[in-house]
Image (cartoon, rainbow, N blue to C red; front, side):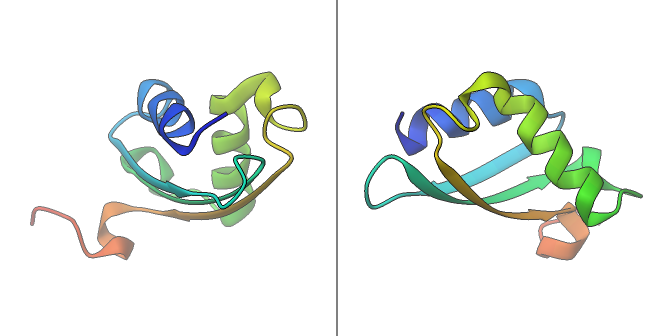
Length: 80
């Protein structure tokens, strides 16, 4: 699995999502995910949403995933 594939899955499955994914070995990944869907959600709920968007790839093709899940406002990217 590549960072680009993970990014594509996240953007397709989370509303208003942008994602930056990095990996040195295509097994262990770091993700910064910014989504409107995270508004009003706690950190655990946000992580669960990311895991859900990646489905059965978690624990398989994606051995480890470090997640930073932010709202656009928290990321400083809101349009307002």
